[in-house]
Image 1 (tube, helix red, strand yellow):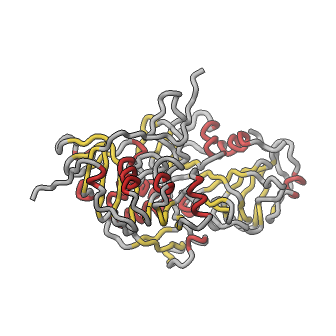
Image 2 (cartoon, one colour):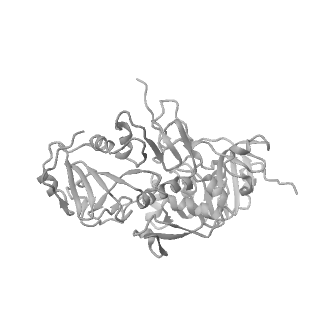
Length: 218
Length: 234
């Protein structure tokens, strides 16, 4: 069975290591915070100006001055710090943030990513995504493998306007885990119950399938 | 000459803001927006404004109020979702929109406040944001040259401020406010609490008052929450 959103978040959470500074994008990436491995310490960076982001507040304790980049009410943790938007993107640009996890509409076999614009339909803006992908040391993309019509979103080249070029290192889709290499997508793990055959058929970009592709353990 | 920056209210602070000017407006979403100044711009009903602001408010609050009244000619923002009227005006061509990566937006403000004409950033290299811009390679990586912003007024919101214009912000409502305050030719700060000089610890001030030209005690803050997200107690 293909992974649901929570399954994708759980699998990505296993990529987060002790001591990392991590920026989580809107949507599935936000869910990753709920499934981080026990016993590790991670600092979440919210690009609107917070390091050390805590969970959502208890009902009645929400604070209009304290939100995340998705404009949701949040909390701080002991050791949290606030800063302005220039410093926030300064630490991103200077690669102080170890891992960026974000969603995508398309990823190319060269690691290009498109996630901010559908011409004529959706023009909401790139927010901080272009800054994040241009500078991040390590980018993991959380995405659905195919669109609603069944067309692959892992492509030879993106068809939508790009957010960044040659930057994605790893993809966790509902069908599996993929490394993005100079030679194309490499299938690393299959989602539980999903066959290699199904993944091959659902992937339009160049896909390298090793002899042994283990099933994911979540 | 004594430094006199305190004005009585938004009307006095915004008295010489005119149609067709370029304004920076602080805030991230509805967090930390200068509510009093925005209301005053609505009341003045000036038009043809160019607004540099990370977002465009929601339909009935924040900069959305200026859009409702067709007061804005052009928005320069990084993210403009959450606003149906904005989208309608943009798609119909009534409203000109320049989308700028968020870090570039912040740093173009910062550059203006630091007296630097331009910055180099990797954000947008290889995308449509790079069209028509100078690309320069440093140490094997490409960067876009982006210019410092030039604005007539900056309208910012702080938590506390004193009569000299020194400002302290609260939590994530800081966001673009200090940067825009630094960048404005004339900077207007509205604060939740206006205090006497000496009240604020010099070590705790986020923005030196030299960047602020007018300051006033704001009133009736709504501080609307855009996405109220909570855990419920079981």
